[in-house]
Length: 79
Image 1 (cartoon, rainbow, N blue to C red):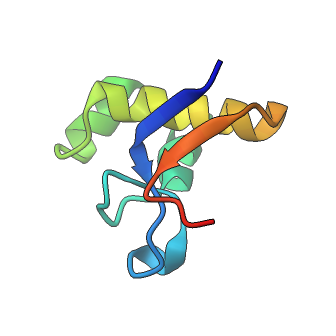
Image 2 (cartoon, rainbow, N blue to C red):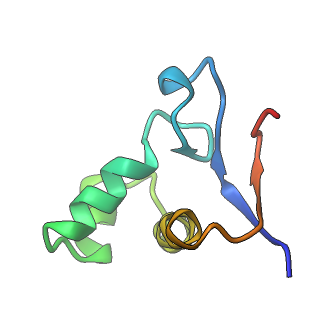
C-alpha cells in the first residue's frame, strides 16, 4: 500500500532541501528531536502554533518509513 505524506515537503529552496512541514522552514528533524526529548504534541503546538496535530503524526510516520524503507510518496520530492 502506498502512503502519501502530503504534509512533508522537500524543496531545495527551503531549508537546504531537508524534509520540512508543509513547505515551512520547520524541518521534520526538529519535531522528531522535540518528541525524543519528551515534548508532548500539545507542547510542540504551543511552541510552534503553525504546526498541527496531523503534521506531528506525519513526522512520526516519515521516521518510521525511513527506519523500515516502506514505499511512500513525499509531496514535492524530486527524483
